[in-house]
Length: 147
Image 1 (tube, rainbow, N blue to C red):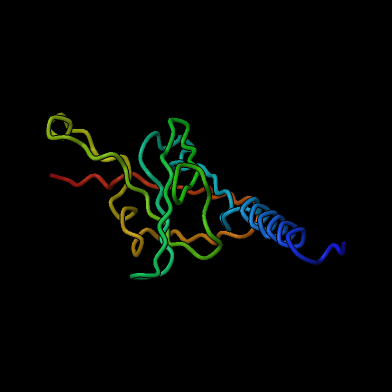
Image 2 (cartoon, rainbow, N blue to C red; image 1 turned 120 degrees about the vertical axis):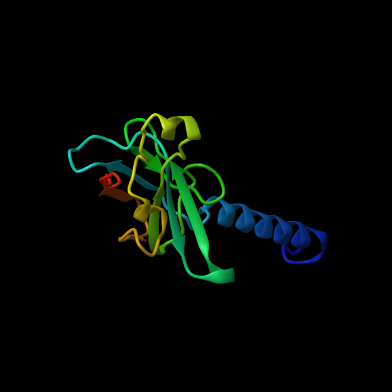
């Protein structure tokens, strides 16, 4: 009996196709790890908030984000926390925790200047490349307005 005839060939072909699909799935999602740290000019860390990246526009846009830890570190994720980002150029924004009315009444200020909450005004861009990526940057606090 020849190897490439009949049911035996069908089984081998099916196994080969299955193996290639499993192998392709194991090659990754096309996303690469992006980790970083957000600090103030004095070197102290931003202790909470989200670092968000946007690539593209409209229907073709991609958004990634990572929650800022108490030491200022974050890790971007696309579908779930820390699963990485697709290669490309991202506009970056930092969204600090919103303050409640009672916090504002006590004189608390947002943790970062509002310009960082908009990708067009934050001034932060980052290119994700194949491999490990590190995105460290500095933010400022809001300017205190004179009364």
